Image (cartoon, rainbow, N blue to C red; front, top):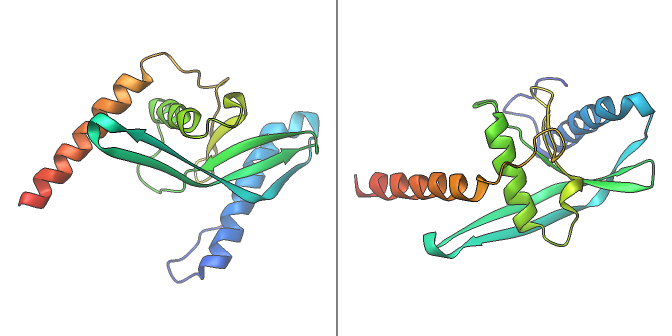
Length: 151
C-alpha cells in the first residue's frame, strides 16, 4: 500500500485504503485462491452503554464477499499510532459483535492495513472479560475528557 499525503483528496484516499484492505484480505485467503470483492453497502451499528451515558458507533465497516458465496464484515483500522494490540483487536471484535447484532459474529474482522495485521474471532478469540475491560477503559476515557474540559 502506498503512502497517502495529507493533501490527497478524500475520494482518492478511500480508493487507496479500500485497495489496502482488499490486498490484505486477499493475502489471508490466497492459500485457497478465493476471490474477494467489496460489496458497495457499508455496515453501521451502535452499542449503547447506559451507565456511562455513552454510545459507541460503528460506521462504514466494509462488507466483503468471498468467492461470491459468503461475506465478511471488515472494520479497517487506519491510525498510524498506536498500533492495534491483540487486546485492542479483541475489544474491537467484542464491540462489533454487540453493535452489529444482525450479522454473524464469526464473519467479523478488524484489519490494520498499515501493519498488515488481521483480527478475527478465530485468530483472536474472546476471553470473556471484554465487557469488563471495555467498560473500565471507556469510563477512564470519559473521566479524562471531563477533567480536560474543566482545565
